[in-house]
Image 1 (cartoon, chains in turn purple, blue):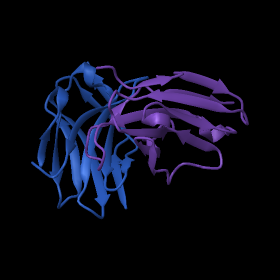
Image 2 (cartoon, helix red, strand yellow):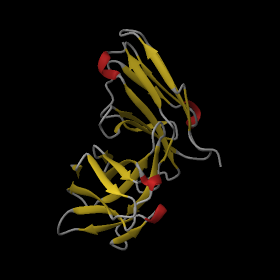
Image 3 (cartoon, chains in turn brown, orange):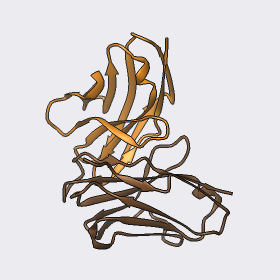
Length: 116
Length: 110
């Protein structure tokens, strides 16, 4: 079974530029998560999708971050414009259960973003 | 509201010694608790999870954790550390959303 795929693995941009990250979850997984992991901290949930609908985006900075999951499969997370404090690893995870959070989340390798 | 606190951002043990990583949780609802491991430049991998069944949970790679409601703790242990256990470990709680601790970096000394 293929794991969660993310691209790119690394990205360096200047502040005020835009950037997009892509995630392909495990086939058949209904739930998809985007996390932000700042160096020295644990992952923080940004947004959770169930199929192509948003379940929770309460911690997503909506003035600059956006995410979509068209057709309930792949997802894209965008930052526009980027700030220095956005430097972090962006993790995508997926799980198979439709409801509840006790099912195992499978994480991708992450995208390391550096904003200069 | 839910949160987890991991005591000790860095832990060093000798190879073959007991591993003990501490996690205390706060939850207004019966919690689901998790331990994840993260190797350098990789995503998180689930070690084990507590979902209100047995209080002693066994995971992969010889790790286990015990849910103690009276102490609001979910400490991770392994009887004998191996060099390959060196990694970052995260405790997480799920009430209505996942909350991760700040992580504990485990160093294994040969």
